[in-house]
Length: 112
Image (cartoon, rainbow, N blue to C red; front, side, top):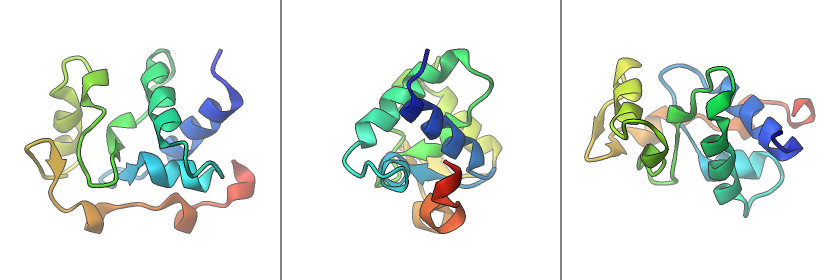
């Protein structure tokens, strides 16, 4: 059973809009655990048994697809992003800053 923190991560990730991306660190910071970006990654890696979770929209702080190894096959992460109109080259979202969705600016912390 996922922890409460993991459930909160999943709730935030479900809010990332189609065609937008977020980072592990931004999610951790929003949840009040700024130094826990790796825990966000661990949560997403464990999410495979849950209903569809758009984990492909969560990248590292520089827009790299650092979590692609959790997808099967690893190319699936980039394919899912491209299907949403997001340009990816060399395992990096090309216009990361423009597509970045910050949960701190878009969500109410008390709901999570």
